[in-house]
Image (cartoon, rainbow, N blue to C red):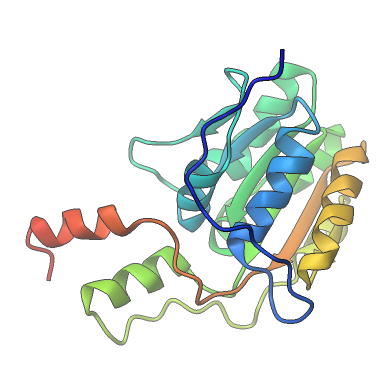
Length: 213
């Protein structure tokens, strides 16, 4: 019997032909290709990836989704994806931002031992949870930009892995399918719409209530 998972009420998202990829459109594609189209373990990194993944992805099996809800330090998913793949003898996928990917990853180790890990990078050239959060709190002049913008496919190939760049929403499905079919470590570098607010409003409201200023 098919299991129907609860979802928040929302209008259908129509893919657009131009411009960077909206995070919610990426998550829809991940839901279809990765969550529903495979049995891979999915790990989500600290930052906006955490907010988007936790609010949008739905699983009908236990032990397939992992996030770090303690300190939420960067590195849990972008490095832990290797252990998840090895422990489950299967593909494992990390969803993370460009800041985390630059700070802490094990692509070279995955290539050395041919571990079937996938990194899906929300590349907006910014520490965007910090950028959006500071703006909502009224702070100005905080340097959160990552300049020059990293090209993670070039970095991955330089370390012996494979990858693909996604510039438009129409490219998402085929890119994710290629990543999931690959037996090599694989990086999907997605050009993300930077101005789309992540769903972490309650977090900001809590900070305000605690006197953040």
